Image (cartoon, rainbow, N blue to C red):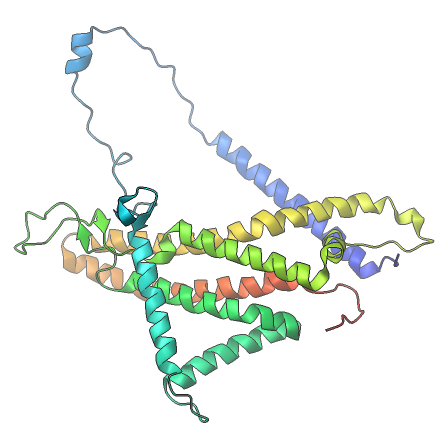
Length: 343
C-alpha cells in the first residue's frame, strides 16, 4: 500500500467541506420553503341537497388552471402502425429533420475532399479539429480519441436543435382554434398542437443524451482504470504499511467516495439533462408569450431582443453540454498521483 500524500488529503478534506456546505444550503432552502407556505384555514363542509349541488354554476377558470402556451409534454401527432405504444410527437419529427439536415451538410462538405480545404469542407474541418484540440488539452491522448467524437456530435446536434427554436413556424404552425378576427382562412388563435417543436425543449431527448453520456463515460472509466482501479480512484487514499495510525481516516474517505458515487451516477447526468432542457424550454416559453401579444406588431418588436439573446444561449448551452462531457470524463480517466500511466 502507498503513502498518503498531503495534497490528496487536503483535496479530500475540501471535498468533504463542499459536501457539508451543499447539504446545509439544501436544508436551509427546504426550511425557507416550508416557512413560506401560507397557512390554510379550516374548511367547513355543509350538507346540500343533491339538486342544489348539481345546479350549482361551475366556477370560472382561473389563470392557474389555464393551459400553458408551451406544454411540458410534447403533443402526440400520430401513432406508428396505429399502436398507442409507438407515439410520434412533434419534437420527434423535428429531431428527425435536424438529424437529416446534419447528415446532408456533412455529406455535402465532405463529398469531394481537397488537400487545401475551402468552403464547407474548411468549416467542417475547423470545427472537428477545434474540438479535437480542446479535448486533447484536457484529457490524455488516448482518452481524447475516445471522447471528442461524442463531444463534437453533441455540440453540433444540440446547437442546430436549439436554433430551430428561432425559425418561423416552429411552435406556431399546427392545430388549434380558428382566429375569428383574422381574414386568413387557416389562421388560428394559438397552436395547441404544433407540427414542430424544438427537440431540446423535450426532456425526453435531453435525458436520453445524458443517459448516453453516462453509459459511455462508465465504459471509458472501466476501460481506463479497470474495475478495481476505478474503485480506488473514486474512494481515494491508499495507506502504506507503517502508517496504520491513518486507518481511521478511511471512514472519512469512504464517505467522500459514496458522495462521489452519487455525483457520478445521479447528479452529473441530471445536471446535464435539466440544464439544457430548462434553458431552452424557458426561452421557448418566453418567445411564445411575447409573440402572442396583441397587436402582433408589438409582439414582434418585443421579441426581437430575446431572439438575439436566445441565439447566444443556443450556442452556450451546446458548448457547455459538450464541454462538461469532456470534463466529467476527465475526472474519471486520470490519475491523482504523479506516476505516469501506461498508454
